[in-house]
Image (cartoon, rainbow, N blue to C red):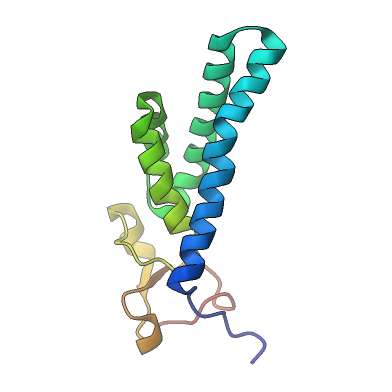
Length: 136
């Protein structure tokens, strides 16, 4: 049927997509920092600007994958932000399906799918029925 959603991505495809997201965002971080340093002549400006942009990107993506916006501040620690972004990329690569536990504020909208091919997967109940199968 033309309106049926695509099944969840395979594990290999999810790994590939998460890798691409990580490469673009995390590998772009030092490149952007170097470009800003070249423009301004200040290493501090390059580092602060590129870190701020990663914080903003992470804050924008975090709620889509059950994290809080304030978790983006982990970028200030360096490795904490990188670890968080690896998890975000892994989860983003699986959307619109979700195989992680919903946060407490997402529970009222969480709809677990009961079909065998969707075992352990939930969706946000605010998503339109045309995009994802309904729980029956």
